Amino acid sequence: MSTIAAEVNDHVHDDHGPAKGMKRWLFATNHKDIGTMYLIFSFAMFLVGGLMALVIRSELAIPGLQFVHPEFFNSMTTMHALIMVFGAVMPAFVGLANWMIPMMVGAPDMALPRMNNWSFWILPVAFGILLSTLLLPGGSPASGWTMYPPLVLQTGDAFPFLIFSVHLMGISSIMGAINIIVTIMNMRAPSMSLLRMPIFVWTWLITAYLLIAVMPVLAGAVTMLLTDQFFGTSFFLAAGGGDPVMFQHIFWFFGHPEVYIMILPAFGVVSEIIPTFARKPLFGRDSMIYAASCIAFLSFIVWAHHMFTVGMPLSGQLFFMFATMLIAVPTGVKVFNWVATMWKGAMTFETPMLFALAFVFLFTIGGFSGLMLAITPADIQYHDSYFVVAHFHYVLVPGSIFAIMAGVYYWLPKWTGHMYNESVGKLHFWMSTIFVNLTFFPMHFLGLAGMPRRIPDYSTQFADFNMIASIGAFGFGLSQLIFIWVLLTAKKGVPATDAVWDNPEGLEWTVPSPAPFHTFETPPETLPLLKQEEAHA
Image (cartoon, rainbow, N blue to C red; front, side, top):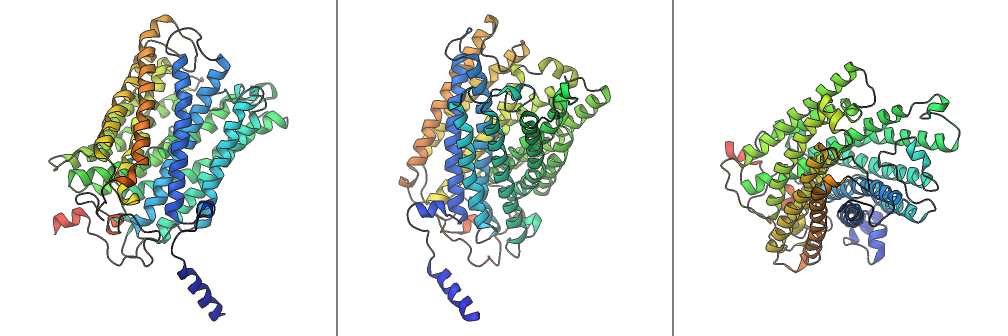
């Protein structure tokens, strides 16, 4: 038996490089390859979802029905949201996690590499099924991404496809989350205690627990929709004794933690970047970890703030209002810590830092509009208006997506071994930032003036702001072509050093650039000193 084991061992150690051709990607078990596939897939979905957003904004550029049928318009709003949430933002963060977490904790790879491969390859199938509904009779789902009954039950042939694709996305997320938890818990370098872990690893650990907690809830809700439609149950059908509001409760019990699933890793990325370019230790490092944990806990007790207008008892409204406001406290701690980190720092403004700064500033605007929506009497006015659209786009686009872009610019030299073109990166940043504000800031005013969401036509008093928002949307969409250029020319720049940036922190900067196919064959014995410890020494 031992001879066989020795032979197997030898065989394993013979082959250190990736497989050749398509096999490398199809059967990938290496965390870097799978991370790359996640990132490419999420970027492709970002472009598809972006094109759908441009259809929406073209229709809304001027009053009246212009280009598409109202039913198709509703399909676009639904598909845009599903693709951006489940196809662009979440896989991008999982891609960053796959690439970086093993390198940050000193692990040779992810703990469950075959499952890792499986969790990725489910995604193209899920989104293939979802996008195929555009070709079905009756068109794709048009009920909003929230899939509220009874509206969603009128979907037609696309309905089972929608439910099945959402199930597949959920399975992929759960598998990815299990993998991340096991890797962090079991495969850290021996000398790395939990509190010594990088903030990005911490935020992802918390996010992974959130994913495992809420994805089955969504699966339950959409399965009940499926049985209502095809098996004669009446979970959500009032005529059969069910309650459509119950679906909203179940959905948002998943939906609100979900928004923190999309922002906590972003907090992690920004907490890695700001100390590097401020050349200072992260202020209040432990409090950042506790704040992220508080946010995750509170995310479970605020869900009904999406439902202030359904006829909740006053005590329910009060509870959810105060619980929602409470989330501002740990989030405020984070923003304070980022600002305090930059205070009197020797800052330079490379592209990752610019995106991180824009994140801090614009995400805070999104946070404040969220606080306005948390106040029940105010929310009854703002509910289902464009103010809500402005709020969640401010936390998702300059929030999650800017953090992803910051992370890509920050780690790209480590991935490719070459520096990207800094001046083109800055051009991409400025174009994106200007146009993102041009797109979403006017929507606050539209909402406050009373323009409802999810409509293809509107009254003429809203025309000017809608035109500005549409110009901004096209500008933002075209700015992403610059990003494509940055990515395509990434390997042509000057060779990057191992540390890449001036004085970064963490294990990933101790390995060569580009990062070798297998990073830590043996776990590192000693860890680089945290800047806090250096400062005290």
